[in-house]
Length: 382
Image (cartoon, rainbow, N blue to C red; front, side, top):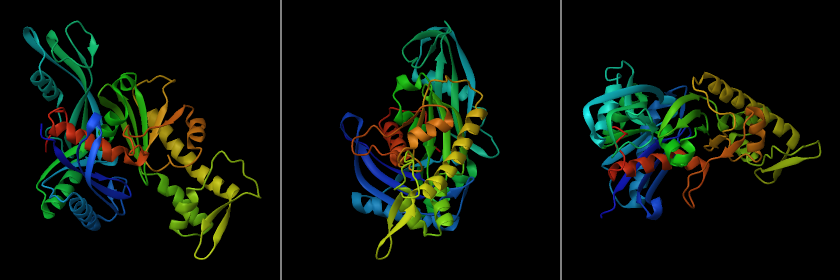
């Protein structure tokens, strides 16, 4: 069988990433080309420097094409959580007599529940099942091949802001790419990071990036609840820069030295490289600045939990991913105390790529490869 090669574009809140890859052995990836370019990102659902996004995306595409020695003609685009919303709906179809459930029946069920075709501001980019129901009222995850007189289900619909889709579509057209398909980044990473048995029991995922954080409640093959807010690890760096009157670059280096479990006193210091010498910073003061911002982020996460209309067990942990908080030493224990739940770090299940900041890019890549290989039809073409 000829291996399928795909190209994906992921919009992070501090950089855009383009990957060209094919499926490797045991579900891994063979990445042939990469392009990462920093840009201003987005805030509260708006690109901060929209006129410069095309330049960043174009450069990322060019770099990936150069390393892969190929030309991108089709691009799968990950849509960030700040530009998407999730709505769950029940749907049911009845059959004249008992029949074997097929892929076409499932697609028909999705269409029955889709009431968003003429939505004024959003467009559906994917639909995924929380669960299905047959005529014996069993809740199941996989109905294909079973016999029933009806097929029902609770379906999660991901809607992207049409303005975002139009902006990206026009930009890619100007870059010579006229074949694109859109994937919810939050849904993609949710399916990628967790095994089905974990998702079937609910999973709480918090993706904290540079200047944005998304909170998701996952069940089955779908996202039950999603909420995002514009705050992340970059705000910690900004606080350090402002309070200590140092450059953003120095503040980022200082943040990486922080150990939250350190009971620092006036004799403890972190050191950051200056122009010609190491610059000491009070560990106590630095930790206080960092913890104050983490406290604010934690309070926003708890507000997201409070907005969720679904009840989920107290014992399930919060899985933390993304590059905003995960690399701060001691973050698991500190955030656990603030959230009142055990916190675990979620990383891609791929050797040598098991880093939290790769979660969305690799999640989108995984879904794109499944689509190309005919293994996933819940992510819709646009």
